[in-house]
Image (cartoon, rainbow, N blue to C red; front, side, top):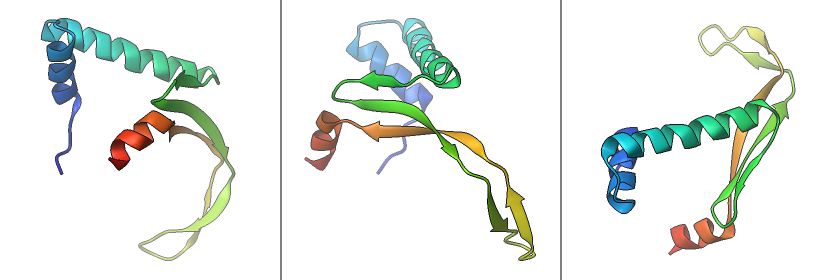
Length: 94
């Protein structure tokens, strides 16, 4: 299994969309920025068949420092989530 990074995705977009790498990079960065802004504003982003990006509130909880074992308080926070759509799930499953 290979891990793809941003550069790999830019090359893929450039090839598939017949764009220069610079244009593909701008397109990818615009997409990621748009998703980030929407989530920051409390919205969700849905690509039918691919999946949905949204946020969830994680409650404050008690944890343990792995080095010392001491109890620590983990504050509440908002976390990003991604739920895969049916088409993506079917493609991955083969």
